[in-house]
Length: 196
Image 1: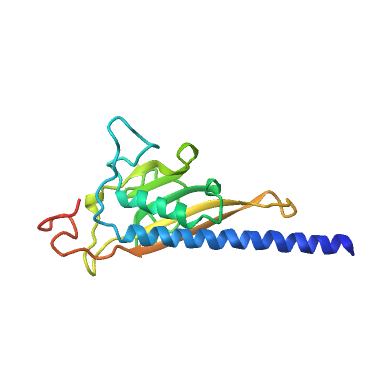
Image 2: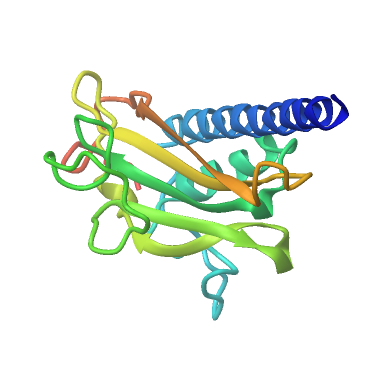
């Protein structure tokens, strides 16, 4: 009976920790999407003179992408951030995925996708940093009833503590939100005073 009892206890512990990390990832992804969707007019990323990725977010990407990555870092404190493989921040199609309207799967990078930026954990700065992709911040449409939709996808690995159920499991979550509307005079390219 003892081996069966121990197997049940280890299984309960592992599943409980897995569910905890899954909830943490879901919460962090939603937090990142909320922060980014409220900052359509934040402008391009900033890089000190001579600096490059991963130290900074280049001007070919929106500042709200770094803000979202920072929000995910602070929201996901209950899970080690270095277990998060990558974060994709992208302009979502009608089905909530990056790329063309016919896309219905999540890519593993922003390669070949317009309006998509990838962030990864960078240990020297103990934070998420820009890895690849581009998205012109001035191209974002944040007008009422016609604005763009933002998507955030997070992929992580949960490591099992006891090894009873294996080494680990992949976890992922995706949040999709409309950008919060800006003033009609500055909500998109071509308006009176377009946002940066």
